[in-house]
Structure formats: C-alpha cells, structure tokens
Image (tube, rainbow, N blue to C red; front, side, top):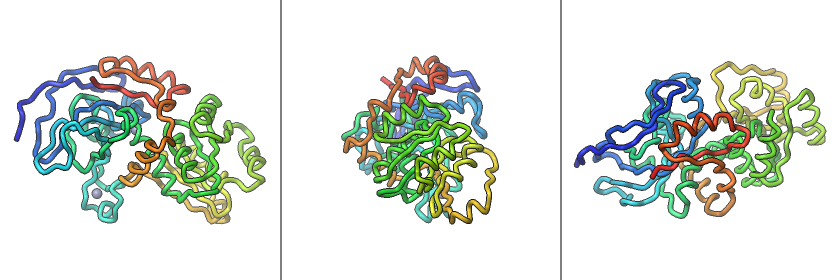
Length: 344
Ligand SMILES: [Zn+2]
Ligand SMILES: [Zn+2]
C-alpha cells in the first residue's frame, strides 16, 4: 500500500560546517514500517560533533536528529498504533539476532544502526521506523517526549552501576548526559555530587539536581574530595566527559569496593594503575545507549514530576531556523542544556 510521494523539508548537514534546509521526497509508505510526523528534535553533543566533522565514521550528507518525538501519520494494518498517537523514538535499531540481541541487550547490538548517525535521522517532517522502535508518549508534552532518549542514557548508566539508596555518587562532567545521570542517581536514592571544569555548569547542574554538591577541577581536586567525604571517596563514579584524561583521573575518586561507570566514550586507549584498581576491588562498567526499560523509567519519572523538563529545555527554534541556530548554540554551551528544534 504505497502512497504517492509528497515533498517534505529536511535539515541536511551537507558537509562539516554546512547546514541547509532542503526539499526532499517524504519516505513512501511501507507495509513493514510506521510513518511518523516528527514534531520535536532534541539537539545533543553527537549532533554538534557531526556538524563540526568530529564524528569518526560518518558519511555526508546526513540528516541529523536521534532525540525525537512525533505523531503517528500512518500505520500498517494490524499495528497497535493509530494515526495521531504521540510517540517517542528509540533510535537504536538492533539486528535482533546477534549475541547481544539474543541476550536481551539490543543497546549494544553488534550491528547497531542509530538514526541520525549511521542512517538519516529525524530533523525533517516524516520518518519511517519499525513499530518496536516507537513507545507511546501519552501524558507527556511533545517537548518532554523528545527529552526521553538523552535522559535514558544517564538512567542506563545508573542502572548498570547498580546505584541505590544511600550511595554517594560523583558525576564527572556536568553536561546534559551527566545531568541525566545525576537526576536518576538521586531518584535511586543516592547523594549526588558533580565535578566539572566549569563552575557555571556545576551551578546549572545544582539548579536541576536539588541538593547536589559541586567540585571544580583544579590542582587539589583529589584532596578536596577526600576532605569532603571523610577520606571515604565515592561509592560510585559516573564519567560523562568524553575526555581521556578525565576518564583516567576518575578512578582515583572511587572508594574501596566501589564502582566506576564509563557512560561517555572516547576514541582512545584508557590506561590505569592496576594496584589502584585491584587494591580497591573496583568494578569497572561500560554503559552504552539505553534499553526499553530505561526509556520506561524516564517516562514514568517525568510523569511523576521528578524531572524539571522546563528548566532543562533551555533553547528552542523552528526547522527553518535550525541551520543558523545550531552553529550559534555551539558558543552557548555554559548556559545551554537541551535545545529542541520544533517542526510545524
Ligand atoms: Zn543525543
Ligand atoms: Zn543485534
């Protein structure tokens, strides 16, 4: 049942440093896929990396956008979704048959394809996706729905680190992903501190995660942390910096018997002292993407009013404004938490 092709507007990253709105054919209706009218697109570090040409394996031109909400425009017969239903995208399309998928970990599928990275994404008017990549967003605004994906990354890190009631948690890197990790560590019952090179970002984070402590990176960071924790250090340290030196330094802040969770990724080797790692019997955990369980936890936390989404969504623009707004946002990283492009 294919429809006649109609045109749509798409923001295309033609090459690094060049964004433009182009008219493209909308995807044709496909019996195996749900067609979604995109409504909100969150812009994140990955998109800024693609724009700046810093993403390691990316082919241009590329339509960015993986933090998406929209409304079902068309669904194949037998679908449980009906036209007009608000939805959230899980942009990590997994193969369903590899060793990770077979063990219930589609977030680290060996053949993963991420919308807006490996394939054209959602900074446009219509996208076709498999039904199981869509979660109903009833009860959320379309802006809130577009924030679920990035918050799920932090929620997944907290779950991977088995963080719970009474734990002390240091989040290294107070950007959006670190903020998400801090919020969900607090929801899990932990006491949260942030460490960052920017005092402004720490203050912003403390405005979002109530009661959080903050440390500014300096010559005596370790001594300050020891003094603040009576020498105990932290039960769990979550790195959300994407910086090799910060990731290596994070190990020193983990207590004996504690856990270090690498949420951020860096295209580099990480080295550490084995005596430090072994004497503390440290648990080192990688955390990649998120699963349906994390998305559902984020959705229910937003519905329960535990996430200050209005304060997190600091910037907005329309699809037509995106080619000028996105480069301008690059210079506002101290005050920008989550920018959202709105369609229609
Ligand atoms: Zn993102
Ligand atoms: Zn797989």
